[in-house]
Length: 114
Image (cartoon, rainbow, N blue to C red; front, top):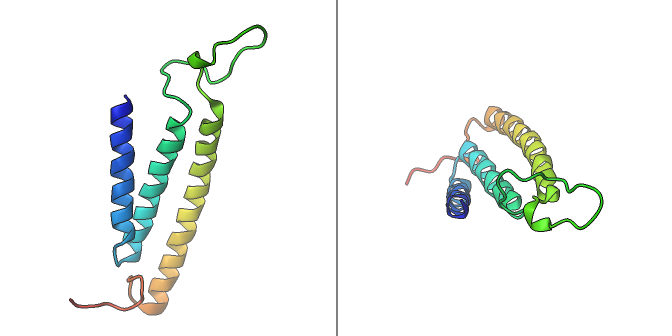
């Protein structure tokens, strides 16, 4: 389970960095989305990978914290998902306005022919 999660985080972050360095704005936005997904998975993994465990500990007595998941990373990821959705929507509106004004979707505003 840890290996699959680690590889998926690595692939998402590597793909996100590669797309962020591309010259077209839509690719940059998709790269930022992939980066945020990779970071969300990383934060979620910090809450311990426990299958079938309750996220909240019951009241009273001694409780073994190793059998419970940490709810704080889950709440952080949920908040990050909402913020990244709103940020992506804002980026897309700005890209559409920039494309309408400049006529191109390159990051620097000009098309280069290699």
